[in-house]
Amino acid sequence: MSLKIGVPSKGRLMEKTFDWFGARGVTMRQSGAEREYSGEIQGVDGAELVLLSAGEIPRELSAGRIHLGVTGSDLVRDKLADWETQVAEMALLGFGHADLILAVPSAWVDVESLDDLDAAAAAFREKHGFRLRIATKYHRLVRDYLTLNGVADYQLVDSQGATEGTVKNLTAEAIADITSTGETLRANHLKILQDAVIHASQATLFAARKADWSAENRAVLGALTAKLGLPATAL
Image 1 (spheres, rainbow, N blue to C red):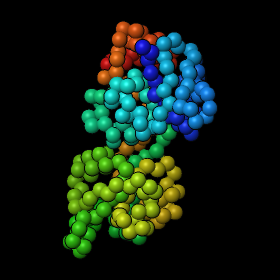
Image 2 (tube, rainbow, N blue to C red):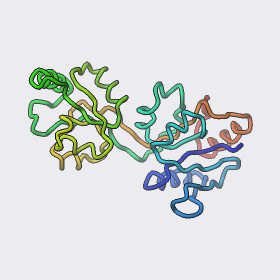
Image 3 (cartoon, helix red, strand yellow):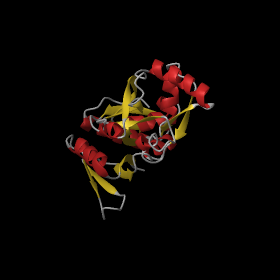
């Protein structure tokens, strides 16, 4: 059985991942047609490339169906409960940077911080009879962050589309979403709270603790980490 490495299957994340490994002597390439999610690895024996969506990689790591995986640190932390018991962080790759933030309407001139949001949420519930809605795809990370910072009287509503548009569409009063430049937020008349960067995400190489770590696969991992210039990973 080969050591399976899960990599995002398209776009800049795939290209940047290929570049990162390639710069360290491990060549990855997509094989077959562009829409065929298969690939190959050269530069280390016994490794197999598995192309997946970035959102699928945390699940496949958790299940142990892949040994290593590259995905956003935000996705692992949000999708996997007690993520550190399921995966080990091997390397921050230095690309795919984006912040998970809280944003409110720019017109809320008195709301600049989490304390302000907590007060606004209490006033909103008293006035409207229901809790202030925060639209997000990142329920676990947002809930944990707000609990840690003492914010109450809110409800999270799931956003599967363009989260920034939910306030304009009156399906939420605030949002928690990933942003890299803030331009889309400003275009939708939203502002980021001063102290509300929930997580600074970037592409990260993870190892699955529950994968089949046979002596053969551990040997491949050792050869790979040596080639990549990474310390040995405790699994």
